[in-house]
Structure formats: structure tokens, C-alpha cells
Image (cartoon, rainbow, N blue to C red; front, top):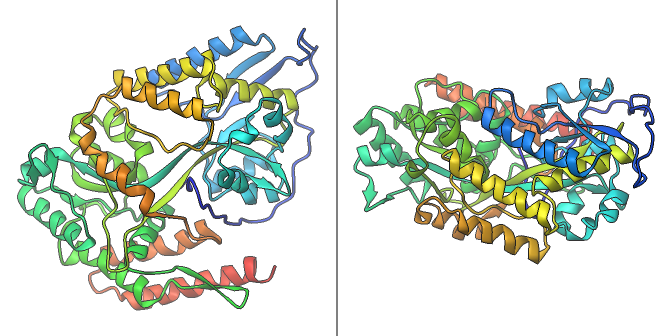
Length: 465
């Protein structure tokens, strides 16, 4: 899970010992410009199975190594997970640069797993171009430890093929649900008329709790509250229980969900991309997965606002930062920043970043991926103007299928819950499993248990500090 673009919160993790610098590369001779020759391990390198993306990254690699003869780029694909990170960090095996979620930076900083890159950002003139609230998330005690890749906000993916089959179109625009009640009714109609799931819900891992929090907010829930300087779990409030009952009803009252209950983020994308589900909670940064990865035509995907509930309308906001191993040397960090600039992800407008932006747009057009706006996390106006100029020049979709989402999102943004966010999700997703697999599941009792478990974690890790 990723975290938001503005107004961002922080979670905590198991404390472990910090790394030493013993795994840094041995010093190599300095080049003419004063840099030592380094090998930069790129953690966001795509998996080998994604041939087109690998080809694009190899292009970045060749351009980077040609321009900077002191840099050798080494592919080092790593997909962040809570379970895998600590062993890699403790053994000094982290890539030079890697992606994580916005729930993670403060705990990685606290445990000294990531490098202070303040000086490198100043030297490259990037530091003052970062959105101030994003910078706060990635900083501690005046030092900055990462840079943003992007931001996202949850909405609702719509499979237009299934909406057409169900007769739920207004011209070329789907009659998408505006409220949670409409979502249930629409999902039921699609299941009845097409035999396919109206909606796919996540329940296999923490992603289930992540999506549920947005549903809960729509029912008016506040999942964590601060009282007298202490944090209180609020998972069993009447609003949160009502939200979980709604989830249960999608299965047992409306018969609207997938037959396979154990779904995670990837299988949810697969369900929408293969037309086995008509709706799925997701964000603008994932449109490549149902289209390129699972074959849904870019013209058969719409992204609309997250439905409103009795407690309001909200869109969970997050994103992905780049962070740097604490064992990386100054030259390795600078080399990683140079590679990011070649990718077009740096907040500067020059030939390299413009080419990177155009290469990315061209890649999307060639691979059936919608070219749509992104949530920007930098403030450099010249750069942002160029990003939008290139996007418009390469737009390959009916923008009306996305317009309501992009116009609505700025008014509905909601941060993730502030403390032990992943631990909270870990308490919620087993409840979702239970209510979707057992018609007689006692929602109140299950939420009471989850609340008690999470309160113990808050008391141990947050309230005793």
C-alpha cells in the first residue's frame, strides 16, 4: 500500500538494530569530474517477465552509462514487503534505491535502514521543488531520506464491457454508482445479467484492510482516535461495524462478489482485466495492470469516484517514494538520482527529463495503457507544465471516462490512519474473510476482537512512548 500525496501520515514497525557501513562498495578511482566509479543497484527495475518494460529500462541504463561514465547500472528488482525488508536490510542486501509505501518512511528512518540524502538533493537542486507535506513525510530532524515517485487516490475501476452487457450505459459512458447503496444494487444487477461478479473485494492480505478503511470512512467511521494524549482503537464503533456489515451483505444479500473470496491486489486487477468482475476499488496509478498485463482494451476501462456513503465521500490517498539504502555511498546515491533523472522522474526540466517523459508516454501508447493525468508531487512549474503538455499530446483515451474522477478527487482526499497502519490492516482483513465465507458470522464479535488486538498493539508500541 502506498500513501498519499498531501496530508500524509505515518506508521511504526518492529525495532531492530541499525546497519553498519561495512557492505559499501570498495573505493574506486575518481573520475575526471570527481566522482568515484560506482555500481548502482536499481530496485525498481522491472521483473524479467515484463519484456517491454525491461527494454525501456535497458534504454535508460544505456543512456545513463553513456552520459556518466562513472556509473554502472545493475538491475536489482525488489518489490517492497514488510516481511522481506528487514532481513534484506540487516544483511546489507538492499538495492541502492528502491520503492516503498508512504506508510513506511518514518519507521525505516527510525531504524536507520535508509540514507540521509539531504546534501545530494541540495546539490542537484531538487530539495526545494518537493511538495512540502511530502517532504515532511520523508524527513526527520531536518534531514530528508527519500523522494516521491508519485501519488494516488482510490476510486472505482469500471469494466465497460460488462456494463454494456448489463445495459448500464448512457451513450459511451457507464452509469456508474454514485453511492454505496447504488454500488450494491449495480453489482447485483451485473451479476444477474452477465453471470460475472459485480465487484471484486480484497480479503487475502493487508490490502483488504486498506480498501476497507475507505469503505469505513464512507460510513462515518474513524478507525483511530486520540483521547487525552493516547491513541484508541475504534474498529468496533457502530459506523465501522455497519461498514463491515455492508461488506458481508455484498456477498450474502446481493450475491455480487467473486466466487473466489481470497483476493489480493493483483488478483483483483486480474478480475477486472479479464472481465470476471465489473468493478474494483483502485487508483489512477494502476491502469497499466488490467490493460497491459491482463488484456483489457484501454477503451473498456473507466475510472470514476469512490462512492459516497452515509458518512460522506472520501478517497484514500497515498503514493510511492524512492528511498536509498543506508549502506549506499554518496556517489552511489548521486548515481541513483542521475538514473531517476534519465527516467524523467526528476523535478527539473532538461533534455534528459523531457526525453524520459516522452519515452514513458510512448511506452504507454504502444502497450494499451491509458495516458492519463498523474498526481504531481513536485512544485516546479516548468516541469509540471511539460508533464501535462506531453500527456495531452499523447492522450489515447476518451477522457470523459476519467473526467469525473479527476474533478472529484481533490475534494475528497483522506489520509490513511496515523498509527501502525499495516498492523491495523492485518487485524481487519481476517474479519473480511470471515464475513465473506460464513453467512452466520457475527460482525460485532469479530470487530470487537480485532479492536482488542489492535488496541494492545497501540498500547505496546505507541501509547507507552
